[in-house]
Image 1 (cartoon, chains in turn red, cyan):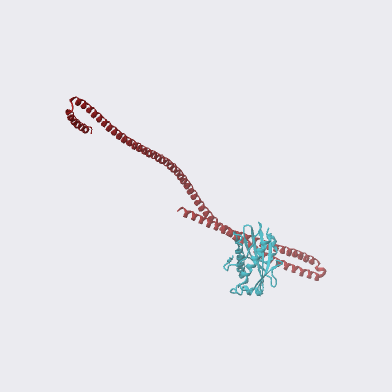
Image 2: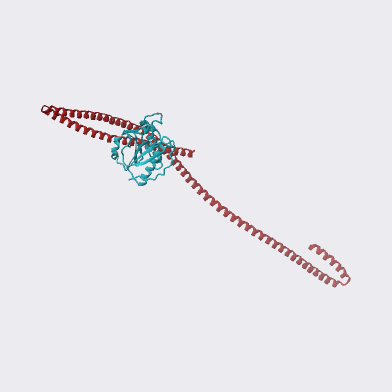
Length: 267
Length: 180
C-alpha cells in the first residue's frame, strides 16, 4: 500500500517537477524540496494514518480476541467449576453408595446370621415336636397299665362276690342253727326236769346263733360298702385311664400337626 | 365346693339325657321328678343298681340307675329289644344315658373319661356317703306312664365346680356300648 502511495507521489512529483522546470530553477529546487517534504509529510501522515488505522484495527482485533479469550476462559472456568462440582458430587455419591453398600453388606451378614439362627431354632423345634409326638405315643402305652388295673379290679370284685355268696351261705346255716336251737329249747321244755340241762345248752346254742346272725349281717353290710367303694374306685381308675389316654392322643396329634407344619415351612 | 349353678346344670343335663336316652323312642312321654330319698323305686323294687362313672381332673360323677323290677318296665325295655333280659338292656341304656351326660359335660370340661357299666346290689346304695359326695341327687323317671326307674347322681370333687350348661339337643349317635 505504501509502495502504491509512493509511486503515485513520485508520479505527481514528476509532474510537478516538469512544471517547475517551466518556472524557475531555484524555485524548482525549493519546490522540489517542499514538494518532497510535503510528499514525505503526506506520506508520513498517510503512513501514520495507516499505522493508526492498522493499530486500531489490530487493537480492536486484539481486544476482540482478548474478549473472546476472556469469554472462553470464563466459560472454561465455569465448565471447570461445574465439572469440579460434578466430580465432587460424584465423589460424595460414590462415598454415599459405598457407605450404603457397607451397611447393606452388614445387614446382609446380620440377616444371614439371623437366618442361620432361625434355621437352628426351626431344626430344634422340629426335633422337639418329633420327641413330643414320640413321647406321647410311648405314654399311650399306659393304656396297658390301666388294663392291668382293670383286670385286677375285676378279680377283686369277683372275690367280693364270692365272699357275698359264702356269707349268704353262712347266714343260711346260722338261721338253720337258730331254728334248731329254738326247736331244742321247745323239746327241752317238754321234757320237764329231765330236759333242764339240755334247755341250757339249747339256749347257749341259740345265743351263739343269734350273735353269728348279727355278725353275718354286719359282714354283709361291710361287703356292700366295700362293693360300692371298690366299684367307684375301679371305675374312677378305668375312666381316668381313658381320660389320660385321650389327652395323650390329643397331645400326640397336636405334636404331629406341629411337626408337619414345620416340615412344610422348611421346604 | 360346688356352686348352685353347677348343681342346676347337672340337673338340666340329667333331665336331657333321661328324656333322650332312657326312652326307647324319642316320641315316648318321659316324666322326670326329683326324688326325696335314695331308696329304690317302689312297686317291685330293684335288687340291682347299674353304676357308671364319668371322671374329670377335678371331679367324678357316679351315675346309678335302678330299673323297677316290674312287668311294665321289663316289657318296655326288654320286650322292645329282641326279647333281651332287662339287666342286659339296662346296661346298654345306662351306657347311652351316661354317654349323653358325658357329651354335654365335655363342652365345659375338655378332659373327661367314662367307665364301663357295672352291676351291684341295691343294698350298696345305703353307703353313698362313703364316697364323700359334694352333691347327691335322685330323680324318678317314668316313661309312657309305665316303665319306671331311679337315676341317682353322686358328684365327688377335689376342686370347686362352677359351670353353667345350656342344654341342647343330644346327637343321636352319642354314647357307646361298652361291656365287660
